[in-house]
Structures are given as C-alpha cells and as structure tokens.
Length: 386
Image (cartoon, rainbow, N blue to C red; front, side):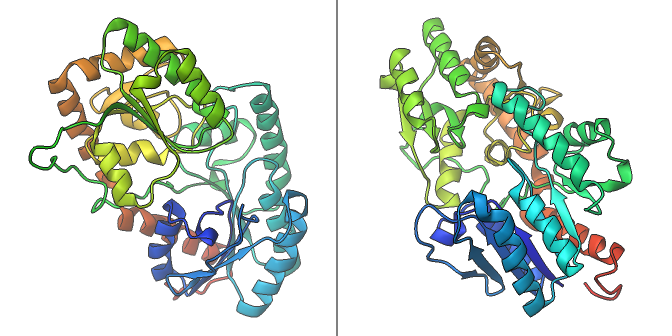
C-alpha cells in the first residue's frame, strides 16, 4: 500500500528528528511508499528521504498557496505512484484538509481527515481560540460529505465533540497518536555520585498561548512563596519565548528557571524527564500531549489540566494529579509531589506502568492497520494486501 500524507510537520525536511521522524521509521515497514507534503520550512530543506521509503515534498509557497500546492503536487504524485489513501493532518485554517479534499475529488483517492485536537476545546485560551473552534466546526460540516472518516486520537474528548457537531459514530475513527519508544523513554537510575534531579518542574512543548505558560509561572511563584521546591526548566521555542522570560523575571524566578530551545535526540529528552521531579501540562486543549506520556514512561509523574488523553491517564490520581485551569490548581497539584519524595516515587512507578500500552511498535501497528482497513473499506486496497 502507498500512502500520501499531508502534514504540518516541517522539522524532518530541515534535519530535525522529532516525533514525526520517529513515527515514519515504523510506518516505513507497513507501507511500500509514503510521500509527505508539508509546509515550506523556515530554512532551506536538507532532507528529502528517510527510512528509504518516506519522501518529503516541502511547499515552495506560503500558507496562501497551500491549498493549490497540495492539490497540484499531490495529483502529480498520485499519477506517478498510485497511492491508495490520503491522510491529512487538519488544523488551523484547514489548508491541508481543503487541499486534500480537492485532491481526492481530482484523483478518486479517498482522504482521511485527522483532527488531533480543536483549539478552544475543552477551554478557550482567548478570543482567537473561540473563533478557531468555530472555524473547525465549519470545516467539519464541510468535510463530512467529502471524507469517509475523521480520525481522532483520544477516546473521550474528541468523539464527544464530533458527535455534538452531528458526525455519526461510524464516521469517527479512534486511532491514538501516542507511540512511545520504551527502549529510550524508560526509568534509569542516576550515575554514581550524580545528583538525582536537575530541576523540580519540567515543561516541554511549544511556547504558544494554549499551553498555559503564564499559569505555570504563576504556580512556580506560589511554590516559591510557600517555600516548596520550584527549580524549573522550560524546553521549547515559539512566539511567546520573549514574553515567557519577561514573566519569569517579573516573578523574580530568573535564578531558579532555565530555558532550552531544542533537544537534539530522544535520548537527551528522556534524560531531562528522568532528571525532573515532576512534568507539568497547563494546556487548555491537546490531542495527547505526547510529552507528558513520555515523561510518565520515564517514571516521572505528571500534573496536568484535563486535556486530551491526560483525563484518561490521571483520573484515578495514582500516576499524577489532574488539576483545574488555574495557577492555584497547578501549585496545589505540584506541591505534594515536590515535598514528598515517597509519594513522588510511588506515582512515578505507577505512571510508568500505565503507559506501557503506548509502546512504539504496538501503537503504530494499530494506527497502520487502521489506515489499511480504511483503504479496504473505501475499495482502494485489495483484501489480500497487508
């Protein structure tokens, strides 16, 4: 089976080996060829092929030209290679989804619309997210007659939203997006003579509005006033980087807070998780998030708002803490884990056990088989194909 993916990921094309690069390593075992259309990267692309079967085609235009680029370049690739399914990662203004729908109409190859999360759901971070949620609803109504299914990545939050928008259950395909390399993300004791923790609280992710960065800073300030451990590390880059540093300075946390823009390898990231007492997520909307599950696999407990798969993983309170969307809620959730080492270790061990089901190979097999089954259902793949 040959797959055409329309992705928002620009990292691989410029040599950055993030989760999408890792995912394609296993996907290349399940598909004869994968072509990936992606936005124009921020610097000249240096990578066109990975894992022998995965080929990248970065756009040569900006966002305004993406719909046309996807329809045109996608049609060229389908004509040359004969793909059986188009998978579109849909978000924002839905350039990918609209372009993929036009491509599907032009070529007869069905497209699967992937909705990892919807901005503003369950809680809008600002007026922009309220508007974005409305845009998503309009797109779903438009795409419902053009795609055989919407893929979602958690089993509660997104299916309920789509049902409320009129999408029938048979058109909702639940295929989790979390696939963790447990050989890399695993518990590991510190080296002899090494301090156990480099930081108390770890944030990993983009520095954007829906991540609740201001509430994390406010929570850290509360912890400092309470005399609780509060050394923090923020790993990520984004438009709020400067504002975040200013907030940290204003809260008088500069001496206990560090910033890292990018971590080179998954092994380096795993070490950061292991060297942290607690990982934090203050997002207002998420599909996963992946980073918290990676942290849990390293036996680092998580304090998170009820977004994405976190509701499912933390509801029982045995692997971390589920908190509300306030700074005080974050601080109250973090403090016991930072003060009580035995509690922290107990929750960390349970967190590691709970996320074993997201093992890289097994989870990606579920995803790949789901795509094969959909292609068969649409009549573009033979029953005897893998």
